[in-house]
Amino acid sequence: MKTMLALAATVAWLCGAVVLANRLDSLRPSGGEWVTAAAVIVTIYYWRFHIATSSTTRVVKVIAFVAMLLGLLPYLYLYSGLLADWSRMPVSRWVGDPVWVYAIPACSFMAFDLRKDPRRLNAYLLGSIAEVVVIVPVWTYAWIIVQQRLGWWWM
Image (tube, rainbow, N blue to C red; front, side, top):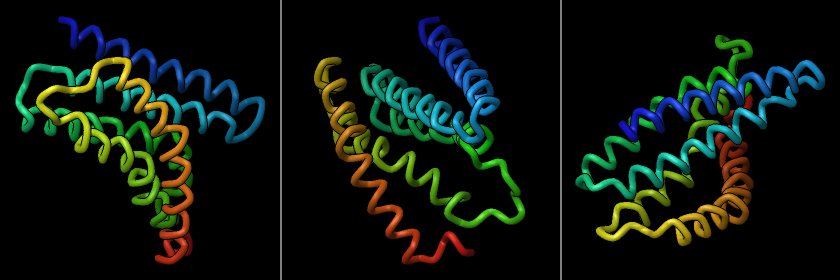
């Protein structure tokens, strides 16, 4: 019951982000993309903590985490600026954006959240803030360079 309530709250959160993004887009084009991207990040970190602190096996936690990422993928494509022209989008948008958004939370989940004793809420919050403020910007810069070297923006 608790999980179903959390799932319903997550869906409401993501829908609210779309409504806010649409209002911002009416004021300034592409202004809402950041709102929906932030909503995805908050959702990933919320469910990551929920999955990590559940009393299931590591395999079930990994399956739940991957299912969560796959479940968010359509939202990421549809509402985070990826719905332009599907037939002419560069690889950087098809593959690069999901890798960019999912890489740090996925690596952190595998490194920290699959331990026998998952982190407490305070440690999780501090670690997540450090990831978002320090590691994600460094990763963003590195990922842009990698995509440029691969020529993904022009494919």
